[in-house]
Image 1: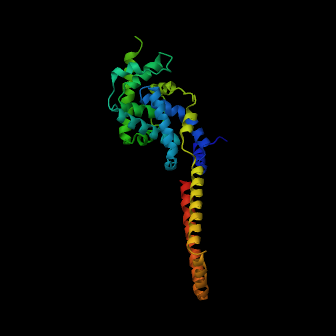
Image 2: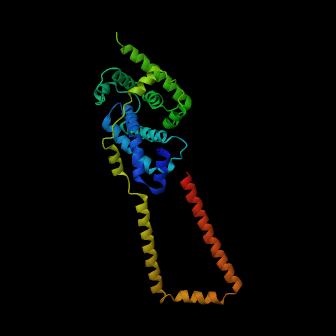
Image 3: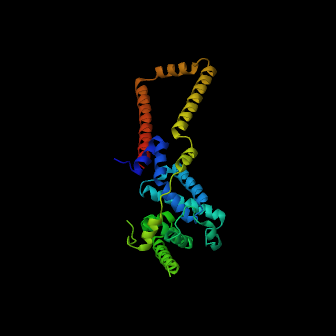
Length: 178
Length: 113
């Protein structure tokens, strides 16, 4: 039987088992790094630094994980807080610097088709809408879970998801084939 | 789970666009930065406490003329009435047992959480 995240968390708590924590990192590194890459507008180096910080904080504060939410949701919250703190330090949390967009293309993007357009369109969204769309539409969190991660009211999450999704559709339609 | 329709094309495209990111040593880098396991820190703390206790005991022994105060205390205890001795032993037992139960409850709730 495959061990669950809760099993590994218990091992970390009881035995301070760093191998168990390593397994948790292996399981969730892709989604956490992916989320942070999108939040940082595909700044891979910064996203990976923030991802490392996320997992280090998770390890240090694992006793505060009560199991009320999924472990991944708890990680997303830490990741988002890391990103927000870093963005505040860089004073670029609010608004979008359009000029940066061309310079911040994801080096892993190899297909210049729909995925590229989608990621580009996503990066054009305001931060609050991008965060909500990423968490709910891409990572499959419920609105309630996203509200906990983003620390905003449930209604605001719903509004941000709706607006973000509509903007994405409009942008993609405008870029569509003639 | 999600209130959003699973059929929404943008949602589907977003999910499909989310590629798996290879580990490429990321986990190893995180593990290298973790602080030392608490078990090691606990054993170090225990060793320090034990050494401090032994040192304090040795100093007390030397400073009290070969543990003279212990002999005096035992002589005083021996002169106490049996009822007093019983009450003293009972009280000490209750005190130690209460501390043990509190420690066990604290540990159990810590593990449960």
